[in-house]
Length: 287
View 1 (cartoon, rainbow, N blue to C red):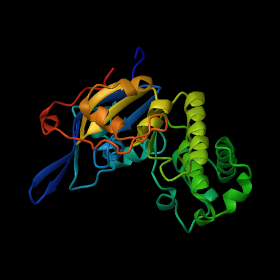
View 2 (tube, rainbow, N blue to C red):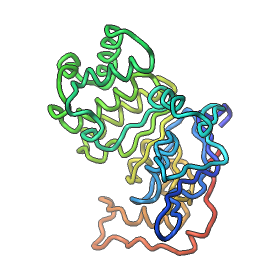
View 3 (cartoon, helix red, strand yellow):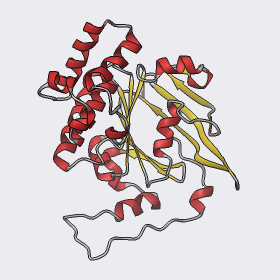
View 4 (cartoon, one colour):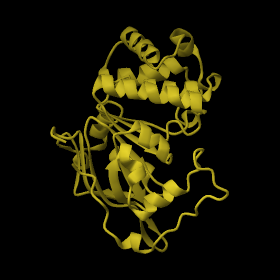
């Protein structure tokens, strides 16, 4: 990566106190993000979503976020006040959550929710915010944006809800978009449409994308680089188009547990874990 990264993370740790002692959900990971599509994959509980939330400082006490470096284009995010972080969230870094049903306010019209975010971060007037909201709904291929602006979230399908969430998170034209399992609840045809929309918006606007997923095949076809996480650590880093050539036994195990149409098998492989992986240092994804 020749240009300065948008995001530079070194030794990021997320810790929660328990009755048995401190539990580290993310354990000393390091990576950079440029104007690229960076995939983070792993099993449920591997620390993928926690990493995205930690970047936005959405880990609430008694949880702790610590890092040797957590910088957005040279700005130390850990040193910002909560008021300053509110300006970062949604304006510089946006996050699309997994299920729009739990992210959209059920008692507010969709248009009001999109306009509220835009006006909060830009100070724009109501008319300008309305026009910007219409523009973003059109950008995510919603055919009748005026009708959607007047609708409530429960009137939308899952695919429409996910497009609306993308429009809402992109309305301020952020530098970084964190997409946490944005297509897991969608059927294949809608999934393809949503990915195509995200890809086009990222490329056109020169953004950085962190794409969090458990679907290795999807990440291999959509992203540029991939970080593989296990038990809060990065165990392997590779180019997305060479993911199927990965060498770490954990990544090989994940790939081997996937069903394949070209190689049908009576039984899928059981993922085997080695206790030594827990003691191995986290692999750096910094460039």
